[in-house]
Length: 66
Image (cartoon, rainbow, N blue to C red):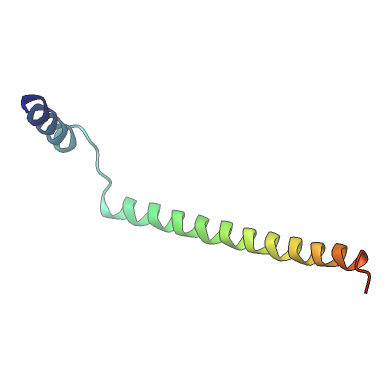
């Protein structure tokens, strides 16, 4: 039990004294960058999905025997 208490005290001390936390402006800017990148990647994946779906439908229609 002593090891657990020591670990928790050391962890708290590290978080309070050694970690550099971002200020509000840095946090907001980083959040906007992450959101923008997420939206861009989502859009690109959607476009690739749409294109591959259309391509595969076309290829399958070439081999359809109806």
